[in-house]
Image (cartoon, rainbow, N blue to C red; front, top):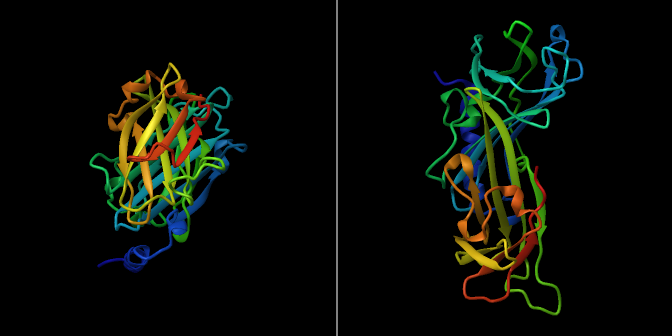
Length: 305
């Protein structure tokens, strides 16, 4: 028999999906979100460690959905007493289960540990949600632990917590460096007077089978554009010239998304002559409505390590 909280979650999602079809554009960054803290396990000696969990489910105006799960830790001590999340692993169990199982090894970045998955119904290739579930809402109140290897190389619990109650609120963007996109200055008349957006870069390192794997990517998000229209993404190449790298189609509400991610098998557009997202720092990026010479939004890529 279905658990009461699962039935309630399903009902809420149905209402949210119906509401999203008529929601205003400024509500599109909101969804069902659960945010909780991870707390040091008293017997672990990790008194300065901190961490958190975010799980979310969001329905867009076109009926598509995006859901995700993110765990982060900072200040975790290794077996030698140094702050280092290398080797930290994520352990979870489904709600009601007692036995936890290892879900993943956290990616490490400047001493922090991060685990993040995203599932977008508009994408053919997606991450896999923890414990084999297809809806993140099914993990309501699921127990979570982050474990680190001790001096005997045994995984011991350092922080613990659980996925909290889902509430309708703003969804945080993925971890990374962001910068705003801006409309043309006066007296120019921009093609989309209400356009807003941002561009983001991310680069994380994780260990797999003893090897260091770098995950990186770029994302461009915009709203206030013309609905159901084609837009071109232009990025400055190594010679300082703008090159068209791709096209994207806006939603019925005038939203546009363009991204590439190494874990999905994407590569940096070859037209711009960059082998690493770090080389994009300071380069110009523009979003133009197809057929328009004037850009709708433009900005510079932020620095990412």
